[in-house]
Length: 75
Image (cartoon, rainbow, N blue to C red; front, side):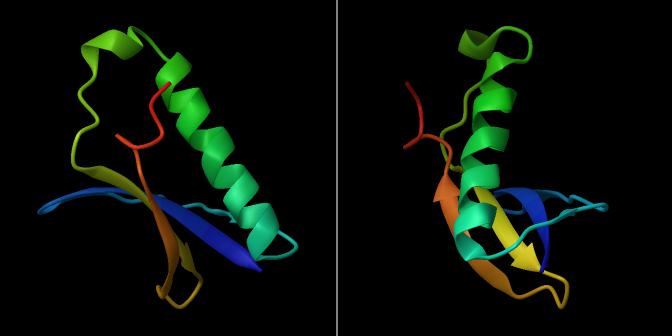
C-alpha cells in the first residue's frame, strides 16, 4: 500500500507529494514514528514548536489512515 505523510497544523498543510510503499498499517505506523524522529534530529529541535502539529498518514486515495500529534511524541 502506498502511504503519504502530511504535516498538518490548523489551516496549514505540508503535503508529502511522493509517499512510500509499505506492506501494511503497522509498517506505515513504524515509518511515521521514524519520520517524526528524523524531523526532531534536523537542525535545532529545541527551536521548533510542534504544539498543534500532527503527522497524518493517508492512503493513495487521500483517506487519512491515522494521525500522530507531534507534541505528544516529544522526548
